[in-house]
Amino acid sequence: MDAPSRQKALFSFDNSFVRLPERFFARLDPTRVASPQLIKFNTQLACTLGLDLQGLASADLARIFSGNEVPAGAQPLAMAYGGHQFGGWSGQLGDGRAILLGEVIGKVGARYDVQLKGAGPTPYSRSGDGRAALGPVLREYILSEAMQKLGIKTTRALAAVLSGERVRREDSLPGAVFTRIARSHIRVGTFEYFAHQQDYDGVQILADYVIARCYPQAAKADNPYLALLEAVIKAQAELVASWLQIGFIHGVMNTDNCSVSGETIDYGPCAFMDQYAVDTVYSSIDHMGRYAYGNQRPIAQWNLAQLAQSLLQFLGETEDEAISAAQQAISGYLPLIDGLWLSGMRQKLGLIEERDGDKALIDELLDLMEQNSADFTLTFRTLSELSGGKGKADQAFGTLFRFPASIEGWLAQWRERLAQEASLDGERIKRMKATNPAFIPRNHLVEEVIKAAHEGDLKPFERLNEVLANPYEDQPDAAHFARPPKPEEVVRATFCGT
Ligand code: AMP
Ligand code: MG
Image (tube, rainbow, N blue to C red; front, side, top):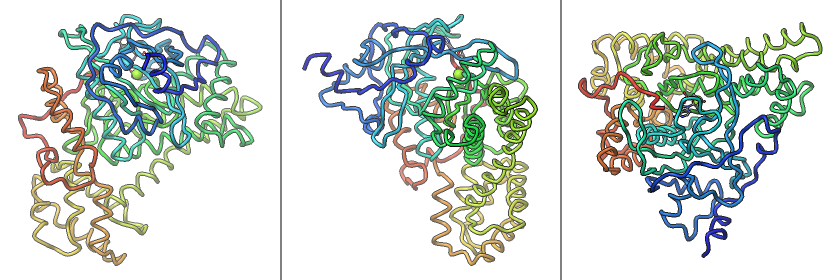
């Protein structure tokens, strides 16, 4: 088969972003790498995207997903955006090392971006080299796919390729290219980019594009732009509530890392927390704890307020009307996320009905977990398996707490509450295990994988992905992956690695 026809068979691109005005992006090809070598290709995702892989060898995939061979129909570009970083306006940012190849329509009719990350410098690279190191690429692969399997909205990992080049960070590291799939790469910072230049035509064109692509129902509203804002608020409330319920800390919730489609995006120094503490921070650059676990709820609202500000011109007939509509929409966020959080936490406790004391019961458990340095994931997983009456397993549950006796009173209250809705153990345990995972990408496991990969061994990477593909299943031969880190294994800081 000759090269062009093989390429044609792989992607059927349908590129819409490139049809927007030229100031929205810079067109350029990826920069070639020295000797691409495939690390991983996500065949299942390729199938969801409707890609035809027949006849492709791993060397072909390596060439395409390193950027060395631009597939037929691709119209490569780097997107322009701005953003608030750690609360301050940074001005223009943009894809400094990512190149959008184009868009494909997946099997169920959804549109997806196909983007290479680490594909070389762009006009938005500023002082960066446009490249990515192997460690962060493996990290994003593992975490984004794990999030998907946990049922959380996220960008996806289609491929990881070694570049055969070194990248200079603090050390010299192996380079890699990551292929990211997203429902859209448009960020709150994309809206801010135009609004801060008072390019209101740009804001409107972008808003119309996002409505058509992500929120078509908003087009039917009296004010489609207000409906867009409300839809993004809802999507972010759902996303952040789901992070809180799984113990995920994004780490860099800058507005340029806040997707308007409501997907988790830009996996940098993100981490799953081991011991529960609301002020947990892993990111080495988050000195003030702005993006600590417990701050994610208000920070998302702050980000959404920047979106509202960018859309302000379009939210009402008069300035007063627009401000009042924006304020009303933004103030709807907290009740929304709090309601989602409460219903999700009820599920984690195995409760179906809604009762007045539920929030107090949940808060009390979380307080006890925090005071006793209990492991977040293991606490809920082990609780899932307890019976509705006192039993032997209570002891194992108690050992998750520094002072096991301190949890006895709470367990009795929980059982009383289960009895109030005539909960049946078998069904309740099944439900709880389907919402409280056994396996999350714990930091020390991810670090182990990266360390092995640096020594040329990718087997631990494969195995971790395999275990994380079924996070809610008991996997008796994977006990090592369910346990929290030993004191000497604890990872205290994570790095962007950019
Ligand atoms: P991040 O902190 O990864 O969200 O990135 C913030 C900004 O820095 C974005 O505009 C990125 O495109 C840019 N950036 C990050 N790493 C690099 C790099 N190695 N080369 C060029 N630009 C980068
Ligand atoms: Mg970013």
